[in-house]
Image (cartoon, rainbow, N blue to C red; front, side):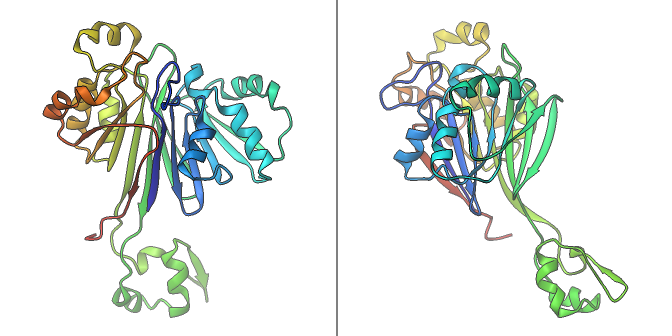
Amino acid sequence: MLDVCLLGTSGMMPLPGRWLTALMARLNGSSLLIDCGEGTQVAIREKGWSFHSIDIICFTHYHGDHISGLPGLLLSMGNADRTQPVTLIGPKGLERVVSALRVIAPELPFELNFIEVTNPEETICINDYVIHAFRVNHNVICYGYTVEVKRTGRFIPEMAMKNEVPKELWSRLQKGQTIEKDGRMFTPDMILGPQRKGIKLTYCTDSRPVPQIVEQAQGSDLFICEGMYGEKEKQSNALENKHMTFYEAAELAKQAGVKELWLTHYSPSLTRPEEYMKETKEIFPNAKAGKDRKSVTLEFDKNE
């Protein structure tokens, strides 16, 4: 299961009760963060989660409302006696940007590993996360992220016996290991059925609608997408500033066939996003106005 929490939903500047952009996910004791706006570590505390287990931080781009909370978070992680490395993922220039921010956090008791994304699409596997970065269309280089949790096929004892797989190897093979024993090579597909549907989360903010968002979000259990503007008269603002309206995000969700849409990254002038949800739901019925600390646990399909 994948725990997901929308830590901050504000774009450009924080508001009372609305921190800047950040999303946190937890899986098997490892936490992943996407963006780290001002107030992120406070929001984690307010949620009752811990930042000690954050192993991966992904950045969509380097505008201040998406990265300004990083130095303070790193300091707090260090003060919490973290010693394991943290992997940072983001567009080209990541190490340079983070090094500049670390002027106020120069000494940390853990190593930072940098993965700079330069291609239109890249896939990174860390712990049990499969992270797909995909370029979107903002006024600076910007990426969206799809996070998948893969699920192996069902264990089929009859297949294991037919393939003469020793019982003492069954458990290890179910965990994905390949084992050599007595001159034979044993692989997971000798005891497992076809791969089952996993969990899929897609996160996109600061972009105009583009086909690659639909492609990456296809069939997602949860699609979190920016809705900078709910007011229809601000369509021209969305075009000029390369952001999205609620209705454009809902259309993407509809095209991608996602299960659920959460809107986020609201303009500071948009103080009551729920007032614009009726028309949004007419496009995509399972759309919801995101709010700080909105959470869900995504689980594997019990029928698979």
